[in-house]
Structures are given as structure tokens and as C-alpha cells.
Length: 383
Image 1: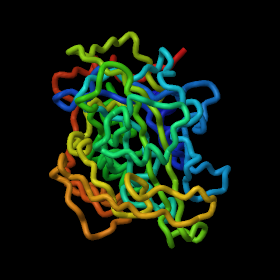
Image 2: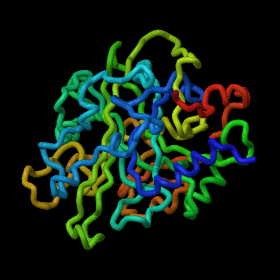
Image 3: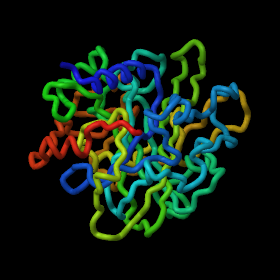
Image 4: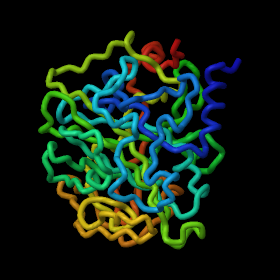
């Protein structure tokens, strides 16, 4: 007999094909590549099981559709109104607790952006790029353009760029009939605990490393997903357009040696990914700071958008790629706009940047019993 929960989850997933993405959950990654400790959540997180939930409760688009602009400008704030106040997590959905130097998985649903790339014209390969920034001095009305100017050389009080990487992590998929999803379901199975042969959506993850110089206390983290429409691709926006989504979170940095997990305090999500192991290439991905040359991606240096509401082209970036901490990164001379379709290959393309990765199935550790998997990741509805 089919599981009622599975039926609910599948119906839910099927309704998300045109949805956008935000950070759902975060986990510390241990030395063996497993998720460990209690999960953390963004500021003001709203669970999909909440009464009256809609995507608008968590989605934050820049520039907003309501303003009639195709380019972001200095008036755009980096955080959604419900995420502008630091440390406003609720008891059920607390901040992530991590130590300096920990690797972290910031997890999200791909919602067809990876597995159904044909659904929207002019989008970049690998479903665009994610930039992650951190600061110890957040301000309520922080602007997107200020955050975009932060570099890897800044102090945390100034605001620091931690990583740039593909939205597509190379293994994630929505459950759909597209060829990418079907292939990844086979290569990277993600069964529901206690249900052999079952299928479950494999969440994507952005991988970061908590700065080793982070001090005890709160650390604000901005997740910035850039998914622009390229020029001369969509007749509706011939000059292209900016399309940026953000999620704002706070980590609680501790220095004690062990991050404990208390099963009874964890509130499970309506659609909880049962995957218990991080992307195999999490450390390579976290170390990438290479700035793309495509001028549609905004970042450090000469790229600040104009304050005008007209659709003027965005200035290009002039800073050179920083590969000092990521020797696996090489420049590519070919711009790829179909990288999502090659998600099973050993190279993941970020426009003009290629990160060489070894994509293999991440199986749960053998020592983890089915009972423990169910205890930690079995779906439970909130009262």
C-alpha cells in the first residue's frame, strides 16, 4: 500500500514546477561528509506546513516585479522585509549552530530550474550562480549593491564574500519526467527511510566554510542567487534582465568542541529530504571564489548598477579570478548555456568557469541504521 505521506509529498512536489527557490534548511557537515547537529533555518522561516502557506512568504525577488525595472539598483534591500531584523528565528526553526572552520550545507529545492531548463528562455547554464556573503555587523536596511561589492579579502566586520558556485550542485533533482531528473533519480537515489525503492526529491545545496576567524556570537549570512535572462534570448526583454533571489540567515558561532543533536527538539518539515550526506564535492565547491566574466552576473569591482529605472546594460566585472584557495578551478574559453543538460558529466560549467568535480552517489554511512534514519529524518507533521 502506498504511504499517505508519500502521496502528499508527491502531490506537493508536482505543484512546484514553476516555483522559485530559497534556503529551506542548513546543516553542519562533519569530517566524514555527513550532516550533523540540529538543522538551522533562515530568519523568519515559514514552514510549508504552516496554514495558508504560499511561496510569497519566503520568495524575495530583486528587482521586484512591481517596480517595472529590469535592473537592480542601489535602492534594493538585500533582505526580504520579514528577514531584515537579525536573529529573529523562532523556537521551532532556530539559527544554525556552527564552529569556525565548519563546512555547511545550505539546502534548497531546485523547483525545475535545474531539471527543466527549457521552461524559460535565455537562462544561464547550471541554473545560474549563487554568491554567499557573511558579516558580523549586519544592518536592517542593508542594500544588495553594497553586499555585492564585498570581496574575499574583506574582514567580517566589513562584510566578506565566502564563495561563488553553481545553483545546480550536480546531483539535485525535482521528481519530474524530464530527462535530467530521470537520469539523476537513477544515479543519485534518495529513498524515503523504511521504504525501499521509493523516490524523493533530492535537494540542492550551496556549500560554504564558516570563516576560521569567526568569533563567538552571531554571524549573518546572505545567500544571493543570480538567475539573469541573457540579452538577445527572450524577445520580451531583448537587453536581458536581472533576476536575483536572496535568503538572509544568522549562524550562532560557538567554540565548544561538540555540536550536539537533540532529537526531541527537532521539528520536521512537511517535505524533508532524507539525504544524510553532503554533496561529495562540498569542500571544492565551498573553496571556489572565481568571478565569472559574463557581465550579467553582478559581483565585486566595476559592476554597480545604475540608479536609473531604464534597462541600461550592466557594466562588466574587471576583477581577476581568485583561485588561490581552489586549485581545482580553471578558466574555460567557451560560454555554456546548456550546462544543466549535462549535469551527469564530471565537469560543472559556470558560464566561463569550470569546476572539475567527481560526481558520485553519496550513500548514507553504513553505521546509520534504518531506525535512526527514521528518527532523524522521518517526516512528522507539526501540530
